[in-house]
Amino acid sequence: MEQTERITFQFYWFLYLLFALLCSYAAFDFMTSANTSVRIGNRFGVHATLISIVTVLGTYYIFTSLRAVIISPVKFSLWIITLWIAISTVYHSNYDWNTAIHFGLSCLWILIYHFFSYYLRRYPEAIAQVRFNIGVMFCFYVFSAVYAMVFIHAHLVKVGQDRLAVVNLVYSVMVFVPWLSILKNRKQRLIGIAIVLLVVLGSMKRGAIIAFPMMLSTWMLVEAAVERKNLLRPALKIIFSLLLFAVGLLVADQVSGGFLSDRFSARQLADGSGRAGAFSLAFKDLSEWSFAELMLGTGKGFFSHNDWFEFLYLYGIIGVILYASLFCSIFFRGWQLIRKSSQYAPAVAMTLVYTLLVGMFGAIYFVHSTLYLMALLGTVEALTANDNRRVALELVELSRKDGKAICNLQVS
Image 1 (cartoon, rainbow, N blue to C red):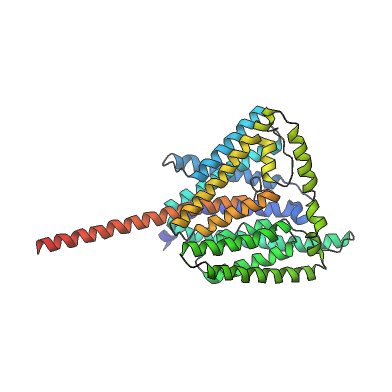
Image 2: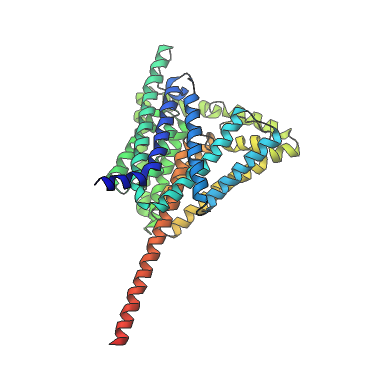
């Protein structure tokens, strides 16, 4: 019994270490982020934990790459984006803290993708532990979002603004929706979806309210395509789900005293939380840029609530093309999975829809919650490879049995 427990610990210790660091990061972020406490606290713990995560995963990457080099279109796209960020940093001589964070996060996406794609290839049984730990992180971010709703609302009332809070942490919850699709237990999937739905409705975030039903619709459509079902049934399910979501929006609007509907008014949408003015200024700047600035960027962010503009400002048209290659690689992977009738196709499709939509009116690539999307893509890569290997072994075993049967017939 003791030996079994020792083997189990040796088997999972690195996985436990990673999730312990992720929990530490989440706790430090919760205690110091303006998204939960209105004021930004001392972020030293957050940055120290992130550096620790990068160091641990970087060490794992180096040692495992000595055994085997695993190349995938997604990882390749992440590599070329990271290399371009490094080249751009040197070219613009821009060595400030924001640049370091951008480069560090881009490296982290490579490392987290590699860890899950390699670790689960080598230890397929660990998927149960991965699901459990991801579930723990999901519950933590749900708690964080609900806490933010209550705390920020109380603060707004205190300063004379009696309205519900607009909670950015909803996106830290939504990144787990693709993970829900790879759960085997249908009841757990439905409970997870219901929890995310409530958080989305309570967040008052327009982007989340648009992206969430699009993700669910994508899930149902891709699942039907994978199972080769008639599209009429999923279409009806999508219509029914959208109607339920619309009812939820009406209830949320009533609870908010009309605040939610006001956020979707023509006046609010035209302004877009300052996006309209930012985009107008961005286009004016672009018209005055030199050819070199258009190609290579300025090395300085614009904070335009749009990842594409952000990449254009920071890294130029070349950076935008490399950024687009990441979405192309995710689309290509999803299309492959659909053609192979893979159960993991909905997860990749939802990841693509989420990153595209949120990246259009917010930020994706340099946002910490993207870690869980990159971990998901790496996990799907590993699970798909494991399934292919299992099928290949079954075919070999079947051919071996057929060969023995033929030999027996010849002997008789």
